[in-house]
Amino acid sequence: MMTLGAALAPRIERKAMRLRHKIASLLLAAGMAAGITAAAAPAHADPAYFGFQTNTNVITGGAPLCLEGTPAPDFQYRVTTQPCHVASNFAQQWTFQDQGGGVVKVENRALSGWCIEANAIANGSAVPLWPCSSTESNLRWVWNPTIFGFGFLESRISGSTGHCLDVPMTQTLAGLWTQVYGCNRSYAQLLLLLDPAVSS
Image (cartoon, rainbow, N blue to C red; front, side, top):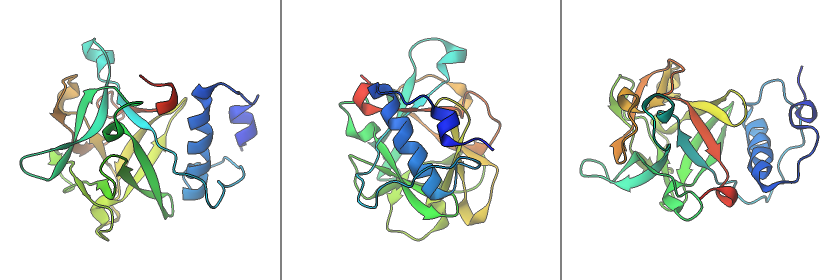
């Protein structure tokens, strides 16, 4: 069984590693870091904000984009892909709200009280923001980490599994609305957690 010490040792003081330590504590508290043991985050710790960088540019070329909460014509807000300015743009900063059992809500920093929602479990369904205070299961997600801050955001709407936040057609296009799609571990669904303190 891998311990947090083995995974993150030796201790690294650089700012680039600070977010990873904070996220590890949150994932532990949420029960998502299977096989990793560490001290829980302090009870009154500030929320750990981070950015979600998409990785479609591995296929298309160009600069990577980031997830952003933006106004929309059909929903009040949508989750879109935009040029990354995580440090200066709070609409690109997010935090996990632990719901227990490995499940989280994902709240936007600029749009406080608004969380990422899977509008339905069907390929192509919208990914808007919805009030975090809602008890509907559409707001429930699991962060499935891989390595080095990469992972996939999988919906738990109605207790389901197998549908992830997805960038349509693996496009690298500013302003593109994200969608729900069957989890396939492709670059359209691979996200990287960014620390705002060291991001542009």
